[in-house]
Image (cartoon, rainbow, N blue to C red; front, top):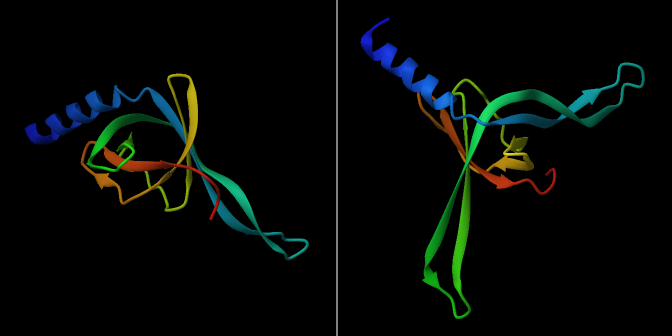
Amino acid sequence: MSAVQAAQAAARKALEATYFGTMTITEMKKVKDIKSKLTTSQLIVVLENQPCRLSFETLKAAVQSESAATITQVTKLFVSPEISIRAGSKITVTQAGITMDYTCSGVPAVYLTHQEIVLELFERWA
């Protein structure tokens, strides 16, 4: 292992030490019943108890309306770079004793040590 690879491995280990939460990924998939030959949509858990971390950032918009300035909270998921989360998946994260459901809102930023995914609150299946 080269010095660069050793440094990357150490950086990844340090980052993963901050993963205080766990996540479960659920997808809506079409499943065909063998007996009835009917295809129905079912919730399928594709990944469970994966270590992760949520990060929250509050952004205050520069534009102020007549009533008040807009304040937005950005929720970011930090997870291993090998994890693949399909668009439309429900991501259930438990951190600090609180469980919330989210969905991806953009393309992940993938690095050698981790990936960052901006999340939105999950409202319903599309």
